[in-house]
Length: 103
Image (cartoon, rainbow, N blue to C red):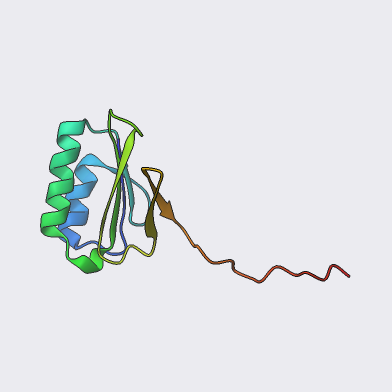
């Protein structure tokens, strides 16, 4: 399985992605392709997408922890590794300061 989240894809790449993927929502692609094909697709994306595309790719793998995260350009998400696990942080700041006064 492969999930690709992009900020902006070139039209030619976007059209090619629609051969292998379902576009769940704008710039979010999901596919159940095999591991060997997934590696080829990742190589294709890295070769044909500029850094402004902001790719974030989640790849299912057979070894622990069961997934690998690839990133390129400004993904609008920060990647962090904790105890050997790769994590994608949506937003590491609180949207508001918690109130200490409950009255």
